[in-house]
Image 1 (spheres, rainbow, N blue to C red):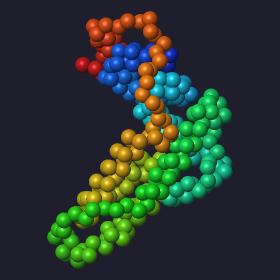
Image 2 (cartoon, one colour; image 1 turned 90 degrees about the vertical axis):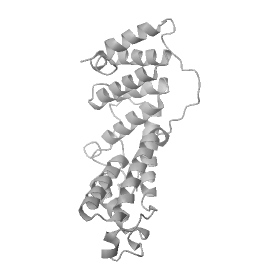
Image 3 (tube, one colour; image 1 turned 135 degrees about the horizontal axis):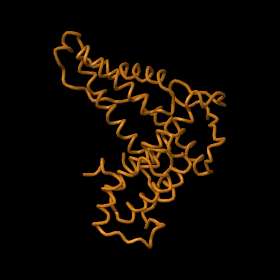
Image 4 (cartoon, rainbow, N blue to C red; image 1 turned 30 degrees about the vertical axis):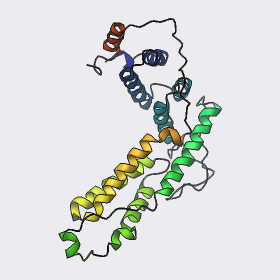
Length: 254
């Protein structure tokens, strides 16, 4: 077990600072991945993680933390009495997020609400999806699929979209896309209908886009500037950095 898996949250932040000061993208990625894993295991408080991310402008890291924490707050057990309702296709009214005892500040709360609304709107925008028709196959001839009505009307996508909406609650857009991916791959394997292949490709594209744009959904956009560091007095040579990586992440960095 490496140091980053057992150290205090405060020491985790110092590792982030070392990565930023040395401009080690590899070290930063490893530290952020370790931190996120511990956050998901409830070993690091949400408020502290968000404070560190905001202080050091870790946009991608913040996107993951905000999204994961929002899913926790919006779970059925966390929302016993919502002010609004979640429809099967989008947001009807804002829920009452249980912030009591969370130690979240106004910035955190604002971003969480913004992310909920933005992700819900993103899901609504996916209700109609234009797909490129693949080449006709023997399946199309046998089933008289020459007019391409199956995809032009969007019937296939609509059914998968509604089923995912009923199976997974918002704001878990990635969870809903995972449902569509699973169902479309199953249909593709069972029927071998060529019209399913574009849906599988579209889901992969949408999933990657949402993951990349998570910071945007929570309103995280920083201007490029020098990152303030709390360890200016520390000078770290390349050799020392390698030693630090070996000590802290022996199982992660060769």
